[in-house]
Structures are given as structure tokens and as C-alpha cells.
Length: 217
Image: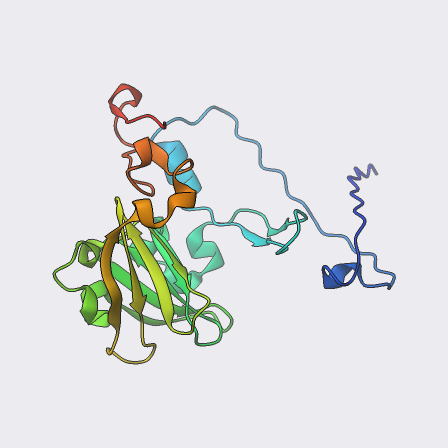
């Protein structure tokens, strides 16, 4: 029998993170290794990445994040999404202020899920659940999103624009806060990292040949 061991050691204090509390702890986990027998190029490579989510412990305020589960298909990790368009990929997502609930977005549809009990709460067009997005560029989907530190608020991004929304969980009383604005100059700290000549988040088309894509600044 052969055992292959990979060990990591990190010094820290309990004040920074609970895992460094002064107690003894030993653990192990299985790490599967997937070997591809041949190279996979576009578009199959992008389809593979899009359908294989990874669950991580992102270890806030540290750089000691680690992978809890290796890649699964979306349907494998979230069986209740099998047979839906979300099985093939997700454009954006943000966590609800309701415990264990999250919003997932794909094209002009959204799904509200409970990721703790593992069930689908709602699946419908974006404008059916978020009336404030009707007749806006966000009605057909968006590129990125994240929940604000303020209750019931989330930032949505599409192309070179963004908006702040009160998403009013459990109701259709959502509303836009402050209108629709360009990402720059309102997020000036992102100037050096926004992709594709700073036109926005994930705004390039992977299906285009490389010579037709805009390059980063």
C-alpha cells in the first residue's frame, strides 16, 4: 500500500481566525485527481469550467483559503437545478438576507434557492421577481452581482453600467437606489483591473476567435 502525503503548515492566532485557536486538531480528506486523456479546447473547455462549480472556504482576512469539495457538475452539487438552464452555467449570483437563500441568474431568468436544505424555491423571469428591472438593460440578465453589507441590498453589473437594488425578499416591492450609473468613475479603484479596455465585467465573447476579442489595457 502506498500513501502520498501533502502537508501544509501555517502560523496564526485565534484572534485572526478560529482555526488558529490554541487547541490540537488533526484531520484528513480525500483528494481525487482527474486526469484528462487529451487536450480540450474552446468551446468545450469553457463548457467544462462553466458546469463544474467548486466549494471553498475563502478564509476572510487571510490567504489560507482551501477547497472543501473538488469540482462537481452544477447538477451534481445542486440536483434541483437538473433540467433547467442553470445546469449549463450561471451568469451571476448573490446571497439573500434570508438565511441560507441565494439568487442565481442566467440570461433573463433567475432562481431562488435554499442551499442548506437543497431545494429550489422559485424559478422565473427576472422581471417577474424584480419589477424594478423592467424596461432596463438588466431585464435580460447581467454579468456580475454581489450582496451589499446593508440588509436587502445588492449591486448588479452589466457592461459598463451598474445599479444598486433593494431586492425586498419574499415580495415584489423591490426598488432601484440611486438610478443606473457607469462603473467608472464611480468605482475608480477598479480602473486598473476591469477587463477588455475597462468596458465592464465579463463583457467579452468567448465564442469569438481570439483576433476579434478586445484586449485588456
